[in-house]
Length: 476
Image (cartoon, rainbow, N blue to C red; front, side, top):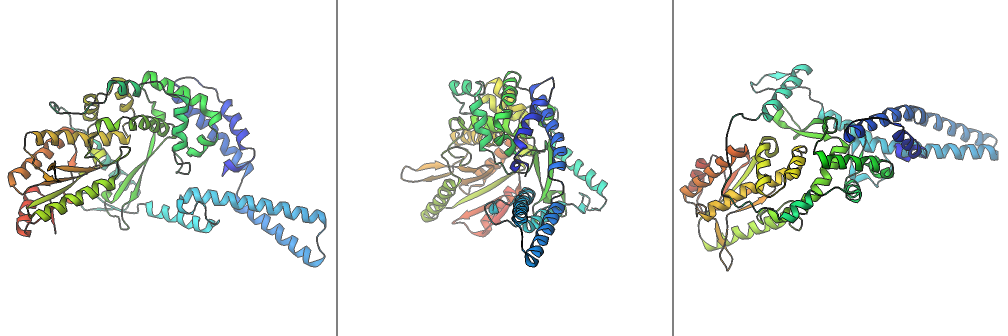
């Protein structure tokens, strides 16, 4: 809304340059944003005030002009005044639309007709759905007091993110497909202004404001104002690998997964990170994207450039069809890792990065950006390493497909994995044991409620027995 004001850019430039501070560049950058935010609030009251009151005033004036026109006509001066007020009304309507569009965040009406009432209803609907009126705890008690609900939520997340202490483990003897030394050195190279700018302009400008109060649109539209300070932040981050606490601050909001919510597990936690932290993560993920193809196995169908999740779906369909035509028995075991990001151990991820050839500097950067999706990609692939070793030792057979009888034991879709196996109980028991080992080392847990086994040329009684052994559901 402010970005449309003709004086905003000059004011923003003056506020930005008017801040004086010392300390770490990232901390100074965040304090500068806070300073601009305070100035912006003052300016907003003066320049915008209450939109509804201004709108009523203009509409009242226009109604008076219409009455005068019907009685005796309008002079050239009054016609000019009416045109001016109409222009003000159009500007206010535009600001109102932008205001409610940002609150509603409905992207599919970006280019649609102005309809503030619609946006208002959507925004209020979002707010009502997110409000937690009552919550059922683990003991089955229904909490209705706001304080007790808050305490229950805090306890849930403390328990969720707690790490076991004193466990020792080691991952050795696996082919981790390390990246090349050239790629590792490129990942560690100094950040450039062009690289930072590219990352910023790739971000969605209309996403909800960050905890610092600004949308990415501000960083895009006023890049020429902020770029020198932002480049200094990246230069210091490159040297130290430190992300200051003020940069790393985030809001966690709970969004309902379904219409009727009773338990905390019925909500999905969403983190709102600061704009600066988001930009740093975007730059790092952009670099990582350039080397993922070297270290992520072809059985992973997501996140790597040039690969499509749909390809893996089509391959899986062809594998199952060929098995059916052959008349051989087999099973497809689909597993889902429970809260893969929440449960995984950070020291395990660092160990995987080391095994994959990432230099200490990059790993230090990653330790400050634990919310990067890159970690999820890497840990999924660590599961692949253990599976491939089991294949080499002929502990997992998989399906042999095509003219060349290529063996396929599994496919991955981000953190969802499907296994292809014969129906021998000892082979499925080996697979189950492998998943337990992976879970012990990484803390990744298989969500059995969302895991299923499907039979191919197999009767339902046999399938149910295998499902019972794997502790999962049998699907028709």
